Structure formats: structure tokens, C-alpha cells
Image 1 (cartoon, rainbow, N blue to C red):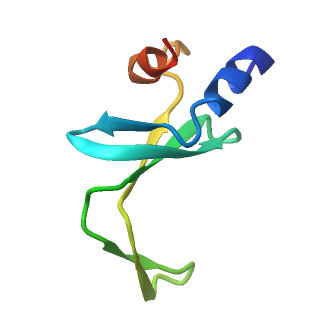
Image 2 (image 1 turned 90 degrees about the vertical axis):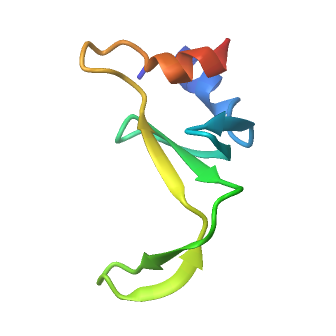
Length: 83
């Protein structure tokens, strides 16, 4: 991923927006997976399992969006957020 794009994406961290009809906040960039992580602020908490699949706590729902489509173009949803 190019440095300029990474800097632009980092500027989105903490930003509140609407995704899938939910009020969400951008919380992380997964550089190795080329993805953006959103946390839904207005959804009910769901049960999260640990690394062994055991239910351990309730957390807000998360969405992981790929940064690029199958043609290696920036995801149009994310591109709109950068404008």
C-alpha cells in the first residue's frame, strides 16, 4: 500500500459515519490484510469468543471492509469517505 493512501486512511481513524444503516466509528486499519475496521456504536452488544471459541465477553458489532476490490481499485465506499 502506498504511503500517501495509508496517511489518508489513518486520518479516518476515530471518524463517525453511517455504514449499513448503523452509526459506526472507524477504529483500525489492518495493513497486512488491506482492511478497515468499523465498530457499530448503536447496535446491541454481541458475544465474542476468545481464540479457543469460548464465549468470554460482550462487545459492540464490528465490520471489516476490504480496502480494495477485485481489480485492486480502492473500495468505492472508502473512497467516498476520503473525499
